[in-house]
Length: 293
Image 1 (tube, rainbow, N blue to C red):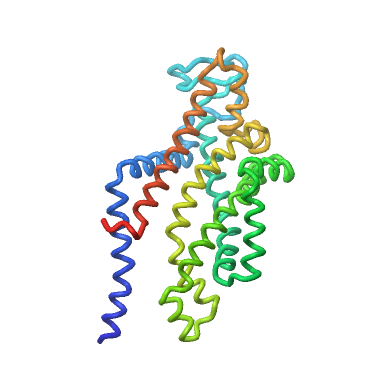
Image 2 (image 1 turned 90 degrees about the horizontal axis):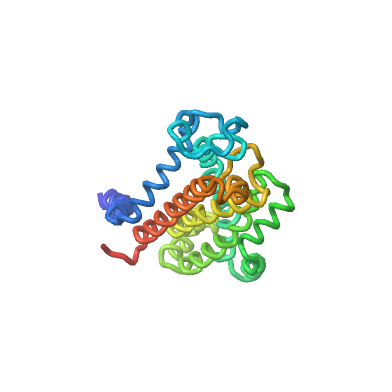
């Protein structure tokens, strides 16, 4: 009977934490606004084929640089392509770049951080020195160098951004593990004969997930800016496929004649990055165990 009660209590604690975190997040208006922005852009990207009335790659030299109108809500570009359609399809590339890049960074960085923080010694020294060497290079400069080395394409840009962002996750995970590995529950698991792999996966990793989730959310915003920068430089998604960065690259030549070419993709980048940053800040506040209310 006591065993059943203890098990029920253990199961109730994580559920209570989740409910408390959700209540805190829901009361945070800026976080909810960020979540709405992110959800809106995700929905627009998913429904782009249904919402777009024009082929984003279809050119028409009779419609070159037409101002916004009832027919073309956001105008047309230098080749007569509908700007709204290109922004909708460009959202797919930007969001995919942000998500995939962060997945790559997490897959590379978290295991290394777990190993460095848990085992310490020469393992920690090797991983930490390599991480510090990468962190010494500015993030965007490293991403540009890797993308140029791999070749211009969206996939190579995502790999370059993911590798460049991985050191952040190594450092964050290492620090969290070092603060947790001597806690009582870890010592208890070690005392009853649990293997190092089991302790890392079952006891330490779940407890480092909240800060990793927050870091991943904020890093998505950074990755979206990086993808736009690489596309602006011609190292990301290649024309004629629509990308917000490549749209800005073309728009710089028509700032006075057709300002809408830069205003709308620039606004899209600003809003989606703002959404992820506000969402990340809200998650940080909601998942912070030091906050009681």
